[in-house]
Length: 324
Image 1: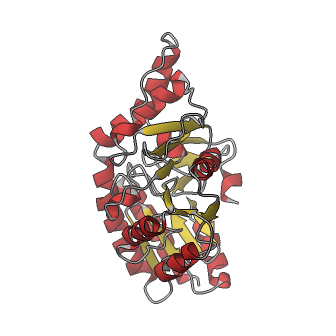
Image 2 (image 1 turned 45 degrees about the vertical axis):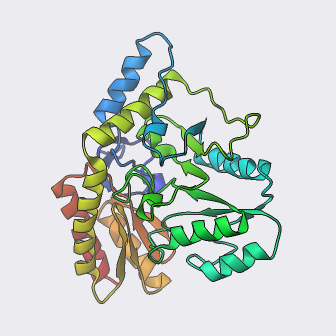
């Protein structure tokens, strides 16, 4: 429903406007980048590139990825990037793919047993699932189990990366460097479709390539996005703003629901589906767009949201919680 509301809209920062000029606060209804919608520096970089010769600037992604992940493959979407990551693992002799659908999220003993009982594998995990934080040290434990069993560690940073959690990458929380990492469409600040796979030299297969040919426009958008994220301190801002929002959300849902998350990947877990349906309906009446996932409502607001925007979100969540 939230995505239908966005059809034909204009967008800037944390807000979108529908064809009837009704304004909404976008906290994840259609995937809002950390820079917000249409950040002027990114738009200016793309427009400037249109007016220049079609010369490709070097993609600067490897300057902010974890040390050792220097090989970058680019794609038009996160789904294509995920397919390539699996193909890369399989080309390294790991035909089996284990996800949280195969092993319970946070279940290290179960993961160890599963890896020991079958052919070589790669383990595909997210630093945060939905808005659920794993136990402290979970990723480092997964990395250790992978090393013990000879499995490859593939981390999907589509939702958690590029500063969303208040660190550049979710793996930074545990000081882990995976073998392969996925980077989502937020890479361009949402201006152009581009995603990436970054890999270590140890798993790189020269004959297995991604689309590789990044358009000059996409390259300009990515590099501008990375520059803005660093120059405006948006990673640090995500941590500070996220702490403030989580404090506010917990206060307004106390006794009715549970607020969780880190940085600007936050969620409210409702007690049952009926409560979730009422809650989401009230949010939409307050013109707040979110990511509705069953009994959990996820919020991924941009780091550029104003104090007024933050107040709008917390007040809307409070009104919705009072209706359940």
